[in-house]
Image (cartoon, helix red, strand yellow):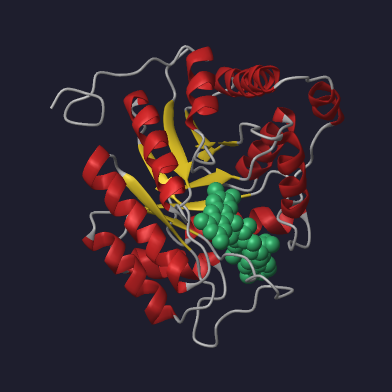
Length: 291
Ligand code: FAD
């Protein structure tokens, strides 16, 4: 089987300890030679500054290609595009363009009076700014606000027609559901790559809670399997084997790129890659390699 290309998603740290954890994660995963890594983006000024700082640190210290996530929440079009320009000044070429969710306390997403109303609008503006690597979000189990699966695929097509180059999916533990979604997208005329987002399960109870908020299904077989786990080590092994099996099934069915939601925990992602036979690549001038 061909070696897939990889990307690793991190979130910006909120404390010195978390900063260390991010850095340890980057240091451990960089030798796997990701095509890019990405840093998520939250609502609120301080969170945004943290995204900027994390991007700068990863670019300077690990010399990896870093994608900046960008949302439309709580900012005018001009402010949102200022952030994109600032990313570009930092050397960021790829943007993960998102609408974003309602901020804490608000029931649903309300666009800023002068803001972008959807990810498709943001993609179009980013294209005009000269970005030519733009990823967007896709939902194998449908975005919770979408009227129907078909309407959601139409929205994905709108984002790609607006100039996005690929889509990264919400995590989806049932691999057949991912394949059905990919087939439906192809039927709707989507030809851009649909990259599966892989979520290694670090803590089953926390993941289940999070999955509920994203309307992602946690299969009964997974619940039963994690129910039998006694120790952290067993949980780690189970997570690695579930994700590795999912990835290898995807690779056997034409998936060429895997995107890992690392949650800034490098060990699970590293061990899944090892289980897939993905070895560290020779690195020139990056963390852990020869300068
Ligand atoms: P959109 O594509 O704009 O869609 C939002 C909803 O509106 C969908 O239901 C869609 O079907 C519907 N819709 C849009 N336009 C139309 C239309 N014209 N007519 C009818 N319906 C329409 N969130 C963050 O805050 N920060 C992050 O860093 C972040 N990273 C993410 C990375 C990935 C890979 C994924 C999958 C999600 C990420 N998210 C992030 C979550 C994302 O912001 C939410 O899922 C959000 O609710 C939707 O964003 P979107 O870009 O998919 O929105």
